[in-house]
Image: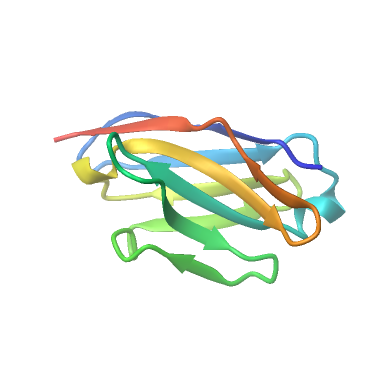
Length: 119
């Protein structure tokens, strides 16, 4: 039903910004809007952690470490979920994964995109 495809990662200096995109390339709009969408990240040697989530109803929540710096948003017309990352820190370096979850239809993961923040 959905196949998340991430893009937008790269190398950035500390204090810089990036925008990650997650396109639900195989989804129809009615399915896309019915999912909860989230961004997770996994740094080397660490467990995957939730960064930001946007529910199908529009509610959002963020990891404490990114509050005030990251913003998750959704563009229905483009069937795309974004993660705006500002004031990046070296500890934000990780592979970032897009996640789509819906109670009946299941859970889907993207392949990940690398974000590297140089200090």
